Every structure is written in structure tokens, then in C-alpha cells.
Length: 130
Image 1 (spheres, rainbow, N blue to C red):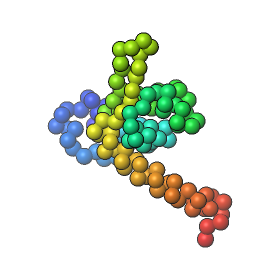
Image 2: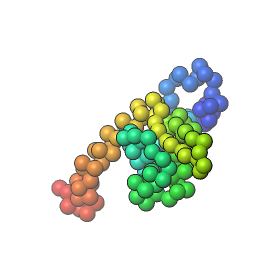
Image 3: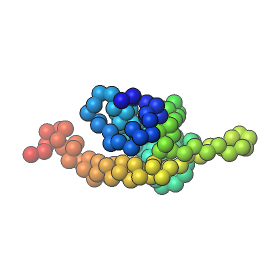
Image 4: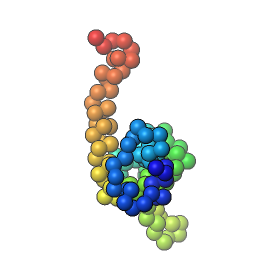
């Protein structure tokens, strides 16, 4: 199976992926969505449409380069919609596609679990958990 999901025949796309197979395109998709920055972008876009500068300002620690790279990957996979308005300077907005909304709700559940359990994990790291 090709690593590029776009190069697959339409009939092959309906088949379920196999994450454990070395050549399965699910790995490339997982690489795009399981990064720290992509996860935060997805959850933030669940709230509302954002401009690039809003995302950069709200996601602490992300460089403009990494934000742009993450948005491009999410857009290429069909999770994020990028709309450019013909103004000077151009106004660009990012929102979730229906597929992106579906994915982002799952990612949000994971991030909520992490936020709720951060102290337990930190206790384990410091050897305090019993």
C-alpha cells in the first residue's frame, strides 16, 4: 500500500487502515494529528474559526514556522479549511472541516483527560505515586 493516501485507488480508500503495517498511510496521518501543535490547533479550532495570528498568540511556545507547518499538514489531510479573503493585506482564516470536527472531538477528549490527570502523572514521574 502506498504511503500517499491520494495515490490510492478510490476502492482502496474505503478499506480500514492497519496502523501496525509499515507501509500503511495511517502512520503518516497519525504523525500529522498526534503532534503537540496539531492537537492544540484542532482543539482550539473546535471553539471557532481563527486567524493565524490568533492561533500563534493563544498557543504558547509554538513558532510561526511550526504553526504554519502543522496547519498545512492538517489542511492537506482534509481536517482544516484555509480561507483567504481578497483584502490588502490578505485575511486568512482557519476552521475545521466536518472530518476535522469529528477528529477534534476525539483529540479534545484526550486533552481533557491529560489536564484532569496531570497531577497523577507528575506524581509518578517524581516517584510519589504508590
